[in-house]
Amino acid sequence: MKPENSLVFTVLFCHFLASFTALGMPLFLPKVMQDLIGPNMNILIGWYYILPTVCTALVAAWWGRFADKYGKRLSLLRAQLGLAAGFMIAGLANDLMTFTLGLLIQGICGGTYAASNAYLATQVDNKALPKVLNWTQFSARLSLLLAPIIFGLLISSDNPRELYCYLAILPVMAAILVGRLPIDGNEKVIKQVNAQAVEDAPLSFNQILCIQFLFSFSMVVSFPYFLPFAESLGIEGSGVIAWYFSMPHLVYLLITCADTRWQQRLDANHWSSIGLFLLVVSALLHQQIDGEKWLWLARIFMGVGITLTYVGIHHCFSALKTRHRSGLIFGRFDSAGKWAGVFAGVSSGLIVEWQGLKAPFSLSAGTALLALFVIYFPKIRNFVRCLPGLRNGYQIKEEDL
Image (cartoon, rainbow, N blue to C red):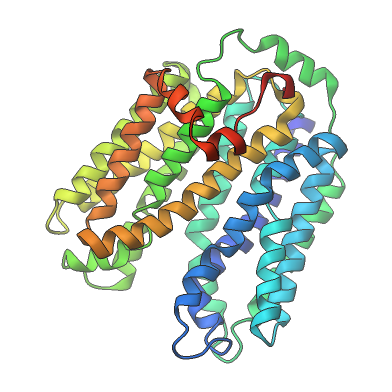
């Protein structure tokens, strides 16, 4: 194995350990918190579900600047050890305040996705970066597929929080492996990729951020109520419903494992556009079906749409001459996705109460269409820049790059 391939594999394996640790436990929060909250305080579970995500979204850009100033590998070590500390505190908690502290540390000091991508951006060349970014998504989705199943078998009925302590070992192992990697700052690679980057990138970074927010919102808004939606279609059995829920992630895994030469046939804009269009088609299919018969097709469309949109976005990253600020770039990219997830969770609850279980799919189709407008109508960017949150929180000025 070539040294650079070995480095990429190590970082991806460490990211898998971290995402496996973090993505499986939220499903079991009702069981974990049952003896920490009162019988009439179940509403707290929803807030605790998004607490680490909100914390990560708030500090991601700050940690990005930290990575650019002090080193991407150091920031990756921080993320792994922060995740381990948060899980250990949550696992040892005997009261709600200590458990809250553990989740806060997990969110504030975590963020391994952005930290891993920022480090890899300093170590691989321009042609390899889109493929590497697809593989970091692969490791996250593999974790999302496997972790809930495995944790469901391992979690104790007497003291479910003790699983947090055992899981804390995984990011510690990852931190040990990261500590053996070379320090970032590979100026030769950075100069090479900047020379290879095109003068006019397919999308500006602010466009990518907006598309990432809308795309993530469109993808996630249907997740919280998928189980009751599937039951309303007459599907019985939690295992069957879980299979349908996981199908888009499985499609992503299968396509990513396939030959990647097909990605060169169209440019980044076209892949993103096709992916977003398929998300619209998928959402409309979900909204129209009245039984299980066509649900498999809607889920496959969703999986292909997610894959192609990510392929397009990742290729756009490779065209940006900003590799020297990869910490800030990926920090804000991750933050946009996290905020989208938070707003999607809140919005889905509100719209289901108002319009029923199929309403989140209408919202999903609408936001995917809006993302398409951002790609093909640059004047929309002027409107987006007028929004206070995006203008003040996410835009990167030219002098910062």
